[in-house]
Amino acid sequence: DGSRVVTASWDRIANIWDSRTGTLIKTLRGHRGAVVACEFSPNDTRVVTASADNSARVWISANGSLIIILQHLCSVWSCAFSPDGRRIVTAGFNSIALLWDAETGKCQLSLQREHNNILTCCCFSHDG
Image 1: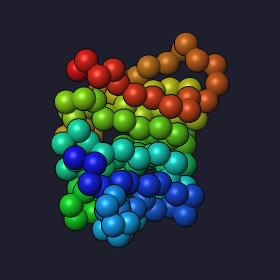
Image 2: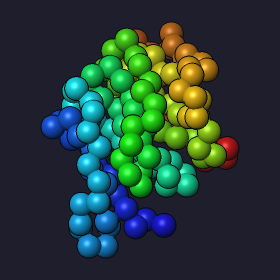
Image 3: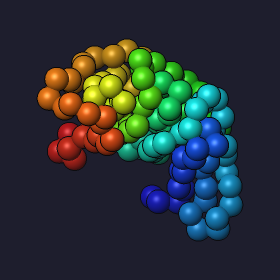
Image 4: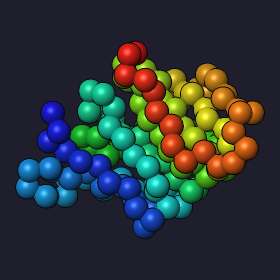
């Protein structure tokens, strides 16, 4: 409903804010490198963050609990949930995008070979 905003920072944390009052609701701590991307799940119950520490992480948005670490071989520059919230896509410094099961954290697919430089962004189409 747009009542919360999540921000990512080079200070290695992500923050969840109340979008009406500007009040800080929750700080997501655990990354060991800059947090460069973040997104709420479609139902707003989870947040995914991408970091220069070679990981993306999935958090419970209500309490800030870390539930999944998606480990990469390089810095992760982008992350996004699928429209149904069942998958996550991440994009890395090594020109590879990975698709993950959002519940188990298991890597399902690797998208590679068509880019010859760092992937800076990734997202799913909205048609499901």
